[in-house]
Amino acid sequence: MNDYQAPSALLSNKTILITGAGDGIGAVAAKTYAEHGATCILLGRTVSKLEQVYDEIVASGSPESAIIPLDLNGATTSHYEQMAMTIKDQFGRLDGVLLNASLLGHIGPFADIEPDQWQQLMQVNVNSSAFMLKALLPVLRASEHASVIFTTSSVGRVGRSFWNGYAVSKFATEGMMQVLAAEYANRNMRFNCINPGATRTQMRASAFPAEDPNTLKTPQQIMPLYLYLMGDDSLEVNGQSLDCQPKK
Ligand code: NDP
Image 1 (tube, rainbow, N blue to C red):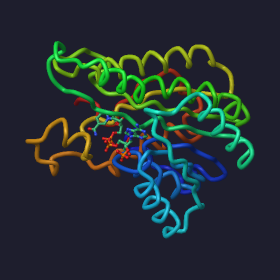
Image 2 (cartoon, rainbow, N blue to C red; image 1 turned 60 degrees about the vertical axis):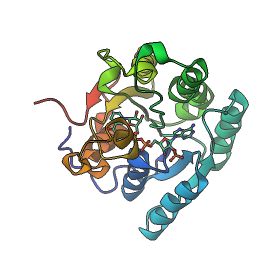
Image 3 (cartoon, rainbow, N blue to C red; image 1 turned 45 degrees about the horizontal axis):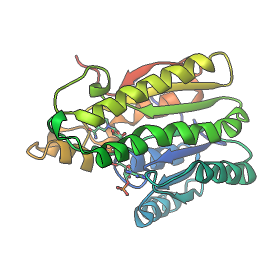
């Protein structure tokens, strides 16, 4: 589905929440979803970055988005419940969630783990998704066809040395997706993972500082799968972990 050509109105009348919408893949996904007609809810921790994405969406003539400033490290269940209530009041339902925000954490020997760093990584990469989704399930169920997309990585499928807590968090992400996909199969919700593969962002540059970014795909180039899984052409797809850049 990496050559999927989305109809221009694929997401019209849909309301979609994107986490980590201020930078990298999340920012491009938000703008791409908006270009295809979605009303986007931009969640992230750096307000100036969210405002920049908001302004670009307005300038492109796409439906006006909304901003939720939230640091997933400090967010509590009451933040998520409040968020779900606001979404219900303003939009009545939620048609999609792209769980994209993540931390890379410490890349290095497992023996160097710092408990505080480990807990922050799990809080942002795993716990926030679970608690947010628990609060959002009622508004997702109000949608005719809701799509929830988790963001995984190849190191969340096969363990690799030095990838440490990040890899462990992506294994947990794959597991959460599978549990939800099984539990809600044949209902009005589907849950899948996307593995973007090596993509030109700040996170990739932090993990591979010596790499030439020009050798990497841009976030724009990997959007076909993000559109496919969010739109109704993928209604039959549930419980899958799909690659934007499959190995040839
Ligand atoms: P970036 O680091 O470029 O962007 C991550 C986004 O998440 C940023 O907007 C960041 O906000 C936000 N974020 C981080 N921590 C928090 C927090 N505590 N609360 C709220 N928002 C937060 O990453 P990418 O775009 O590269 O990655 C997007 C997803 O793709 C991640 O899940 C990543 O694991 C995955 N991935 C990426 C690959 C790649 O090669 N790029 C490869 C495989 C997977 P802020 O801008 O404020 O820091």
